[in-house]
Amino acid sequence: MHFATLHKTLCHVVGMTALAILLTPSAQANSFVHPGALHTQADFDRMKSHVAQGAQPWLDGWNRLLSNNHASLNWKPRPLAEVYRGKDGTHGENYATLFNDAAAAYALALRWQVSGDDAYADKAISILDGWGATLTTVGGNSDRFLASGIYGYQLANAAEIMRGYAKWPAPNFQRFQQMMLTIFYPMNHDFLTRHNGAKIDHYWANWDLANMDSMLAIGILTDRRDIYAEAIDYFKHGGGNGAIDHLVWKLYLDGLGQTQESGRDQGHNVLNVALLGVFCQMAWNQKDDLFGYEDNRVLRGMEYIAKYNLGNDVPYTPYHNSDVTQDVISSASRGDIRPVWELFYNHYAVLKGLDAPNIRAFAEQVRPEGGGGNYGPNSGGFDQLGYGTLTFTLDPPRKAEHQAR
Image (cartoon, rainbow, N blue to C red; front, side, top):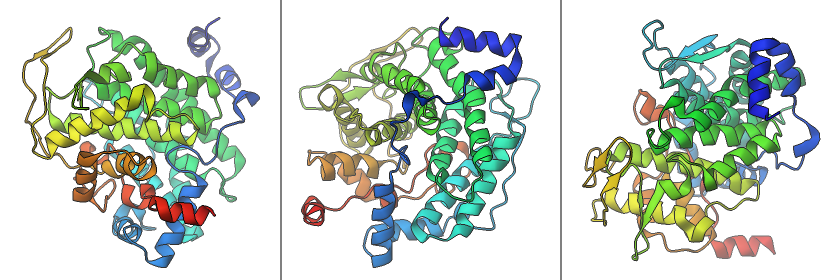
């Protein structure tokens, strides 16, 4: 029986006890790098070393983290049993509690890794344990699938950073893993499989990307190679707008690639930068190079978005799907600022030495990147974990080569 069919049958027939047995991580995927979602141990070592030396721009990135109240020991987690995003006519929306706590868990985990102060680890664990023991439902209207994707990948990343912490009891960590597998992953899988009952091209790319991010992060966190592979396969071959050939759907001779939400608005177009970067970076840390897939197709799309949002002209081809026709590129929210550019700049320009002038310019404009709470109080300011100047800045190639010797 196919996993998804068996999963659904167990949910309805034998309940969560049998489901927990089914979803127990197996030995099939013990080859994962840990920590290995957005950051590896080498990344944390680099951050810690440079901050201790007062080196720039890491120090500026570190100070941006310290100034954010989500990274404070005064943070008060508020785990809920039921989270709702989107008005369903019955429940009130309360999802801001979750995205604030997810941002805090990540910020505190980073602060622990760089400072070595266990007080921040303990606070991060208190947030993760609270949600792991309490959350039972993510609901609402169709927007619930944005919650399952965005907050799923964020919680999984915070937990992946903390997984090796000696004072996180193994049963509690396993309970958190199980929560991710029984609440978030089924929603990710369902959305990418059924798209809420809509046509395959109905939902914008960011909906797919969010759920792909969560699926990939959960696969890493729970050592589930099958879940990880499902997400990678969707990136390469999926039918929805988050698959790379549908996201960067039109290639131009000047090296740019038009993206699926370009005719919608630039706020969502830049959100695609955030969500696609997370996906590629997590895969990279597991030795899968999606940044370079199909001759750097991702780079072409990100350069297109960066160039237009920096105020420059880009080519545009009218976009059509089952629901819309967009004859011109949208100027709505043009120049939208999100902390998403350091990741791409450091991978393509610093690590690989490729030409990425527009990504570089945007990274310089936003640096040092903040995190949740630095870009407004609403959900858009928390769609990305941020702090990329601290976390993704790499040593210049010559220095890195010298250190390797």
